[in-house]
Image (spheres, rainbow, N blue to C red):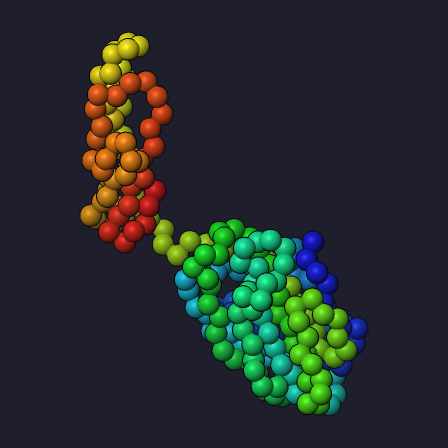
Length: 219
């Protein structure tokens, strides 16, 4: 399970979070809002893409300086590592925090957690909380995000397989034809079989082929 973080007050909160075209107005969650089990608050984020973000604070009464941060668990290990901090507002303010986040190229595909933390930094001696800290004033929200590949290949592969006539006779063959994707295909059967779109003189067995198009998308 992920570490706990949040506050125990309702004097200030994250009123609205926007990431790209996703806009979530959540209001006062009493220090912590868990939206990971709500499909209305899920979002897709694409590897190697950047998204504009904004975090809008809300106050019960007096407005205080707030500083916001965002983490994404890119390696899906249940922790928010130092290199998974994707946004730091930098300077506390009483206005909407804006900026951008980038999805790491080595992020694992699939569902993972995004955490946004807004802390009241109303005095210079107040430390900025980390991803797993409990603190006095502000709010933390957790979301489920789906990391998806940056390029969808769209290649269609048709294979023709001829089995060997009988055991001990190496006269089997495999050939493939490819359409879609970005034309200019490369074929890799591994170090023993070369880079052709077809193989012949094959015995019974299993053969693996990786096809890449000119954009280096493979299938």
